[in-house]
Length: 226
Ligand code: TZP
Ligand code: MG
Image (cartoon, rainbow, N blue to C red; front, side, top):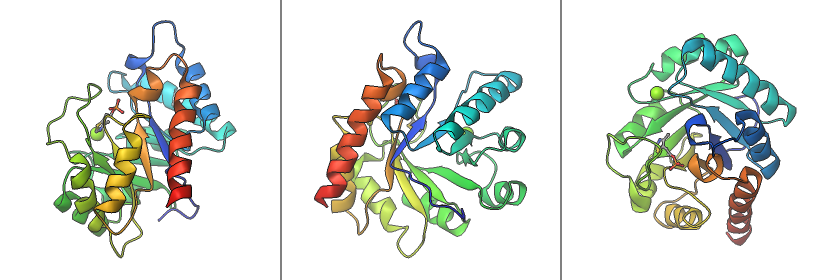
C-alpha cells in the first residue's frame, strides 16, 4: 500500500517509437508534465537493458522535478536501480506478491487486467492499482486479449468494491473518447475510474503539452460535473 496519495488522473505511458520525427524524448516528456500528466510509466519495449536503465533514470529525474511519480514497466531490477516509485506488470510478468517482496515498502504496484477474474486476483494479491484494457482497439500494442469495451470496464470496476485498489483504463483513449470512457465506467458500476492511461494521444502529438492539457480539461470537467 503506498504511504502517499497517488494521483492517477492522467497516467502517461511512454513509447519513444511513437514520437514524431525529430521530437526529443525528454523534451516531449517534459512538455507532457507541463500539460498536467500526473503519473508516468516508462515502457520502452525495444530498448535493451542498458538503454532502458538510462531512459528510466533520466525520466525519473525529470518527473521528480515535477513531483510526479515514475513507474517502470515490468523490470523490477531497473525500478530498484533508479529508485523508481513503482512497477507495472502484465499478467505474464512477475507476480504482484513477489514484486512487493522485492521493492521498498510504499512502492506503487500495478497490474494489467482484461477481465473480471484478473481483477479479482489483482485485489487478492494486493495490487495498488489495475490498468484495465484495452478499452478500444489501438495500434500502439499488439493485443492478445479481447477488447474490454466501456461496458466491460464497469464489470471489472465492480470487482474492486470494498477494496482500496485504484483503477485506470487504457487503450485508444484520447480527448474525443475519454469522456465516453469516464461516463460509461461510472454508469455501469458503483464507482468511477481513478484515471486514464494514454500513450499515442500524447506521445505522438507534435504538441504533447496541449494534448495532455486537453485530456486534463475533460477529466476536470467530468469530476466537477459528477
Ligand atoms: N495496454 C493495453 S492497450 C495499451 C497498453 C500498453 C496501449 C495503449 O496505447 P494508446 O496509444 O493510448 O491506445
Ligand atoms: Mg509486461
